[in-house]
Image (tube, rainbow, N blue to C red; front, top):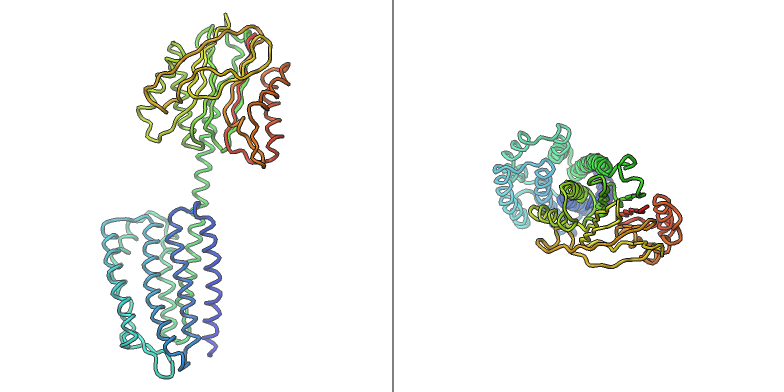
Length: 468
């Protein structure tokens, strides 16, 4: 075997290894890279197969008893090269995001010519159209070899359209075009030096360059997403209630709340605000999703509840209004559970509407916290038009309300055990003498201790209220 053949075989083995590594990376990060990974993975497979088939062809070159293997490997190599060209075109159209009618027509014509070109390659076994294998097992190019890429003519209008229409950077255009540029350069080289079959390796190098584009695009997407999440988180934090120390009824109560989202932005929210000089509204809610979409849903629900409450009315009337408004345009199909109360700070009377939320822990008559189960309605936007029942009770000096979302009771540790309501009540009753801020901080500590480093999978929101 000549030195040039040794070099070719060595680079092809290295290329196969590189393709396998990149393929594994694509599969491992399939969700991160998106659907474009499918087309790119197809390129990796056909590129690896091209390298393998070319390697096979060189190993049986000039071996008479392997003449049939030489013929078959070269036929498959030619067909696989067309396949790689088709997959490259699909990849380029997707990565450059150009889907005009001309591009679609070019693609359809190319597929038709691809089938014809593949059939011609199969005929080459019987008639030397593109190449021949003589009795000594030596591969030689036939007179029509130069015409074997005729099917790519169909792509010329589409390529021009892609270059003109795409809005990506020149660097991305050139990198994507490397699938054409590098193999053409390799073909020219092999034309002058038989044995320097670098076309499959050139295709592999083009794949490596385009993999860099995928990684770069992914990093940009992550940066944009993180920036969007940061902004959403800041907005969400900004709409949380402010200190009510200057409100008229502050001397009659103590209140504190916290929210710990499982992601950058959460699907929980809480609020407390004065409706008038004597009435305080408090609420805790949990949206049926997490992340950015839930965060915007949270903001809409929170604004609707507050704006409607400031107009007056019973909690059940307010929740019914919000349910009607959200259900009318709830295309994502989200819903939200809400525990909403209006407290008369002059008398301690509490009117409550529970829209599918967890039962609160109440401490009435200084007997300690307990779970008070009472009638409740469906979550907001879950069953449009359903009624929302209302309950009421009276608070005396020292009575307390503890609200929470299921992220607290369902917090789990490595053995899948849950924090649960019993453990929550135990912590509450062990810290009765403390104010609401200290109580909630103690609850956080106990949850962290229980989970022992297990990743938080749901938002945890808590609100404590004491009537004085």
